[in-house]
Amino acid sequence: MSDCPSRKSIYYTEREAKEALIRIHVKYQNSSTRAFYTCDQCGYLHLTSSGEMDDALKQAQQAGKINQLSESDHWTRKLS
Image (tube, rainbow, N blue to C red):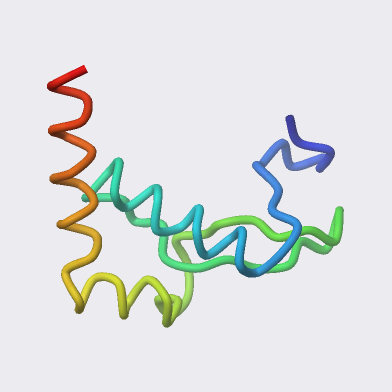
């Protein structure tokens, strides 16, 4: 549940926002979400599709981590 007037999901730390960013790309490989920002209304972090791609996401994509986690998630769901 969000405590922000924007009704967007909130993240309390950069680490939490970066993990959410990667999780979104694992679940939705065509996601346009690329970074996070500090909200002027609530002071917490939100994800965005604007701006430059976050370095953690860029590194995860370049290292193949997104594809690897997506494949793992696919098989976990299929075998459950």
